[in-house]
Length: 230
Image (cartoon, rainbow, N blue to C red; front, side, top):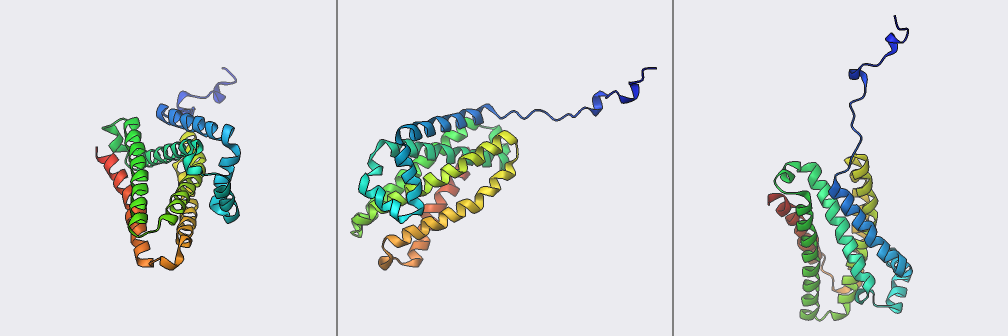
């Protein structure tokens, strides 16, 4: 009798766990995000660093405004594309986890396209709303600050979300995404505070609350609902 017979492993005893293999769409989108981030950091390292710091520091915010007009430069376009790409990917990960049946009818990349275009439309519609608001109520001086703080907020939020998306996709643990919730809420509260400080004397808290519900929350809820209904 073979002395190793009692120690031989049967096929049933071998772990049936499969090696985690992220879906191709996840790899494509993450690589595209990394490519965009490289295009931002390499030529615009200092400005990008200033963008991040300006969201948290009034001193850096003032320095950025004195040195350049970020919203009129190439770094703004590249960074905005990165932000929207990361958020669209994050929303797709959430949809895939909670509403996987919706992705059986439509390819994930098609859903991503809907999310990306939808986020882009929402962003520019808000820009148009801010512009109309500033003209109607003679708040033209506040328009730049509103758009700039919005840009700073989504950039910081997207940059922090990116590693969460990578970890969730390449480890298979969606629970990692829950760790982003308190971070996003903290950034959102800071963003709301910055918006309130732009012109505190002319702020009506009730109108401000309605603004955040209608322009900052409702459009994204409708976008996710639309992407799962198609």
